[in-house]
Length: 151
Image (cartoon, rainbow, N blue to C red; front, top):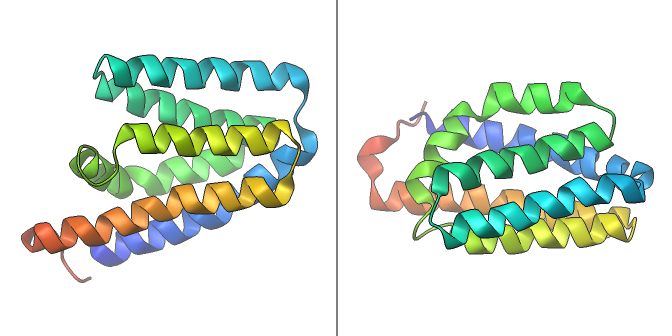
């Protein structure tokens, strides 16, 4: 796995998603809150049932819904193009480095800030959420240095 590709992917994803949620906070309607709340409930069930693949799909759906609320499908399309390498790291890290319960709490923080139409809080919550991926990469690299190349 190319370390620089993962780091650059995380950087670009964070830039895009922080802009997306800030815009979504200004645009979201009460009707758009409901599908997000439903998604979070399903994430909780997936975690309880240890359905990690389902959790990952719901996680992606949550982020895609944010781009739809911000009326910018291109943002999600761009993220999907760059996240394949990041996803490989996510799968490796889930159990001990980035537990799904923690990711779900972060999703709830993002949702709460959106419900309050608070652009600063939602951007801060998204930053914290996505920095988790960057930090998990460093931990996984320490544990499995052979998996990563420097280029």
